[in-house]
Image 1 (cartoon, helix red, strand yellow):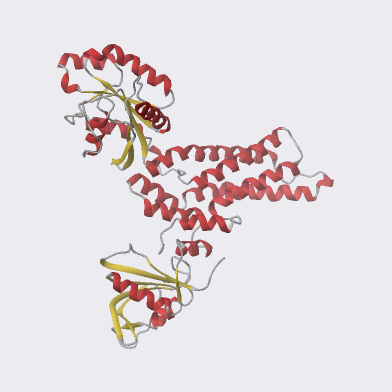
Image 2 (image 1 turned 90 degrees about the vertical axis):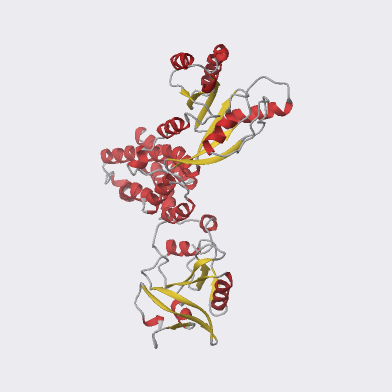
Length: 462
C-alpha cells in the first residue's frame, strides 16, 4: 500500500490569510521543490541542505517570481511521514497558493488524498494506527478535555496500556502452539498458573477500557444534558441564561417549545451539550405530544438531566410527585433538581423549599442568579479524575468495538481454562484476542477498506 510518488496539498485552511503552508511528501519532494526554488543566497540548493532547516528564497516559474517564501526541509526518515518532506510557507493569497500548487502538480506531484500524509506516517512506522487516528481528534478538539484526551492518545495511551499485556499473551500463545507440536509427548511449556493470572489481568484492563468509552465519547462530543420539566417552569429561559443569548423562544404561553433545541457550552474546559425540550404534561395536542415523546427520548440518551420545578408555594403538592416520577423513570441517570423563579417567593419560603427538597439548586433563570452555582454543580458531577490522572480513556468507536471483541475472545479462553478443555481448542480464542488487540494499533493486518475509511475523515493536507 506504500506509494513512492510525491504528493502535495495545502496544510493550512483554505482561504485568505497572512501565510499559507503547502506540504510535499515523497522520495522526490526535495528535488521537485529545488527545481523552482531560488535562494536569496547565491548557489544554495535544497538538495544539499541538512534536514530540519529553513531557507529564504523565491518560487520562480520560467523567470516569473510567484512569491517570496520560507522552505522547510525534512529528510527521511526523520520527518512526519518518514519520507522526504518540504513545507513551503508563502503569503496567504488564494491566487499565490493555487499558482504554487498547480506548478508542482504539472511537474511531478499529485494532489494528496484526505489524510494521506498521516496514512504514510502510519505505513512507514512513524506512528501506530491509534496514534494516527488521534491526530484527527487533536485537530477536531474544541475543549480542554477533548484536547487532553486526544493528546494522550496521540502519545500512545492505549498502545502503552495494551503493549505489555499483548506481548505476554503472544509469548503464551507461542508456548501453547509449541505444546501442540509435542502433543503426543504430554508436555506443558506454558505455566498454567501464570497464564490464568495473565488472562485475569487482560480481562480487567479490557473491562476498564470498555467502561471508559461512555465517558470518553461524551467528553469528546460534548456531554448531553437534557433540560426537562412542566410547561412554563423556565426551561427555555434557563437555556438562554446558560448560553447568554436568546437561543430559545420564551413566552408565557404554555407549550411554546415543541421540538428539542440544542447548543453547546464549554464550562471549565468541558463541553456540555444542553438540550431544551418540550414541557411535560397531559395534552390532547398531537404536535405537542410528539414533542413530549421526544423530550423523554432526549432525557433517556442524555448523560445528565436537569429537572426544573416551579419554586412558588402553590406548586408544592405537585412538585414532590413530579420529582418522584422522574427519579423512577430515570433511575440510573444523574439528576439535578432546580427550583426556578426564586425571584417570585419570599425569603422564608426559600428556606422552607431547600429543607423540603434534598440537594436542590435554587435559581432565577430570568434574573440569571444561581447560574454560576449550577455550572459548578455540573462540572462536579463529571468525573474528570481520570483526565487529571492521565488515565487512558477510549473515545474511538472502532477501538471500542475491537476491545469488546477481544473481551469476548478472552472470556472464551477463561472458560476453556475453567473447563480444562484441550489446549488446541482455546488457542484459537487466544489468536482471536490478539487479532482484535492488534487491529487497534495496526500490528495485525488491517483491511485496506478500513484504512481508507479511517483516513477519509481527515482533512486534505494532514
